[in-house]
Image (cartoon, rainbow, N blue to C red; front, side):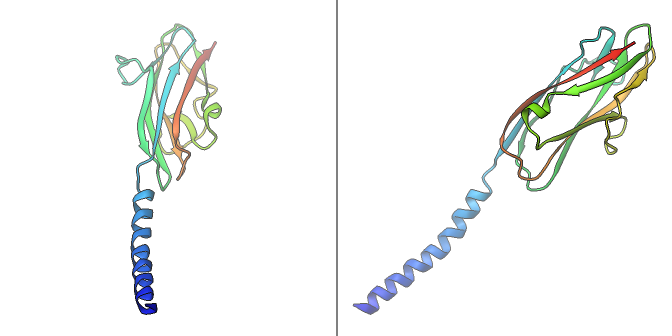
Length: 159
């Protein structure tokens, strides 16, 4: 009787030893999504935001879509073309409400480069009719909290 109990106990332990790693693997690799939607706003008349250099496709929203929770840092971005549609020189500024949503995701917006990242478009000038290529990017650290993040980028100009 004792031998039967030992065999049953060993069998149960072996089954448990096989099942636990399988269950843990399935649980760990289940997709976890981060969704985002960024609204672009430009309250300044005469300042246009576009998806293309020819300024034919207005940029109103940036949709990074559903992102599977990364297990390494992930960088996403998009080009946005800013055009001074007025007749005077404008100094550009921007801000974002991302910090109201999360402090985990980082952002920057610079002229031209998708790699160099500073607050580069703030306090720069656009002459009348000038179009400037900019790159807005977000950096999502590994294991960012799952959720839907929606924020607004506001771009404005001062004379």
